[in-house]
Structure formats: structure tokens, C-alpha cells
Image 1: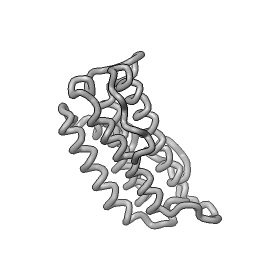
Image 2: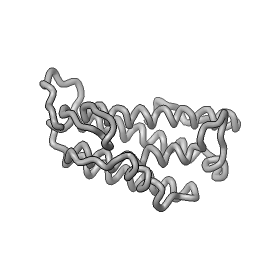
Image 3: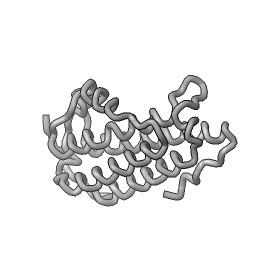
Image 4: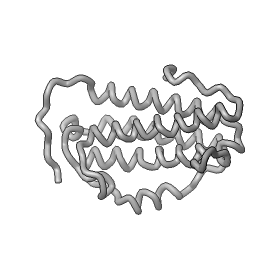
Length: 167
């Protein structure tokens, strides 16, 4: 299902997009660091999930997503969810290590993505149809969304979240 959109004026390069994403990932990492250990895995407001679970959702999509963008071969949502439950971190240190590991892998894989793949259409995880650059933007937006929820958690715990502009 690979259809290529006609290229127009480029506003941002793929490397600049990766740098933008990594900046958000650094901010997410500092948000994790701000949490007390117990609350990172248990604290919730208004029925939302604990922040550790939200982080795991974000990192679980990263590598399979980048591989999908790179190759056009996507895991299904069921495969993605099954994979995300393997080796679930139980400490802040383990979660930070996982975030670091996934960020390093994403940086390495990114360089292997042919530039034209970003404008091609795919069906991500067998479910969502769109352009590959849109999927990347969605993953970044999803991380920002969950980090904003974590900021609410931190404030309700009396903890100042990191400044969102310091990436």
C-alpha cells in the first residue's frame, strides 16, 4: 500500500524532526526523574493511568514504528501490545534505562530510513492509514500529551515539573 505524495517545499529535514523528537524525549526523561519512585508507578488522578504506564506506551511504539516507517512492514496492534508487556520495568532506574535504550535505538534506526519513505502512505500497525511523517508527528504528540498529564500529577503532588521549553 505504498503511495508517495508529491514533494513540495521542505520545511524541516528528517534529521531536524529526529532532533525535535529527541528533545521531547529528554524532557520526558526529566519528568520521570521528577517523580517519587512509588508515585511514578501508582499515582493517578481522575482515573488516568500512572505515568510509568503512559511512558511504556510511548516507548513501545517507538522501535516497531520506526521499523515500519523504514521498511513498510508493520506489527499489528496485538503484536505491539504483547511486545510492550515483556520485561516491564518496576523501578524508576529501570524505566529511565529503557527510555535511554529506546532513544539510542531510534537514533540509530532513523539514519537507515530512506528520505522518500516519510512521504509514503502506509497502514501503521495494520490499523491506521496515513503518511509516515504523520505517524512520527503522532508519536511525538502522544508523548507530549502524556507528559502533560504527568505535569498535572506532579503539581498535585506539590512538585514543580520541568520547564516544557527546556528540551
